[in-house]
Image (cartoon, rainbow, N blue to C red; front, side):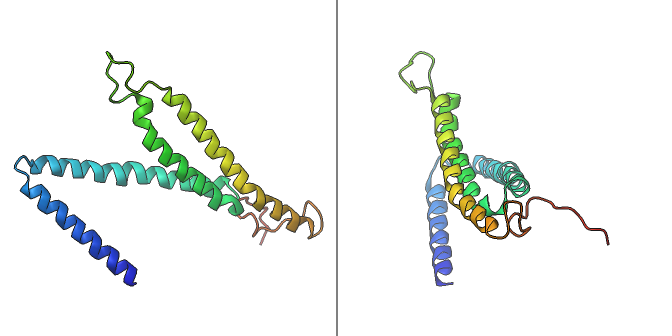
Amino acid sequence: MRTRVALVAAGTLLIGYAVAGAWADPELAPAGVLVFLAGVLVGHDVVWMAGVLAVGALLARFVPRRHRPVVRAGVVGAAALTVVALPLVLGFGRPPDDPSVLPLPYGRNLAVVLLLVAAATAVGCLPVELRHRRRTAGRGGTGARSRADDASTPGPVDPP
């Protein structure tokens, strides 16, 4: 609780500092700032959060429960890398008359890094899968499986 109070106090002080600095700027355009803040709000709450919720629903539907923490970490890492690298991939800031600005093949490099993230995610799931297989093999063979181990796969429904 104390940590939360300290973080809220620090955030409030930083916001106050930013507002005071903005009002002290003689070239401040309040309408432009409000348009920017509205755009950020729409971009975050409508676009970004809708995407996060959709990906979360897909993960809950298709990824077994035992692998979800590792897969979530991989997806968050891939999303962060993509957001940072996307301006470079799209070539924002690259003047047509100077090829030495942004000279690398950023699209290919992003694809390689995302493949490495996917490989690391798969390697991270491996110990959990091996532990799960040892546990289910000890319960009576390879076919025995508990619904609690994999709640994402729907089982047969018994009639009432």
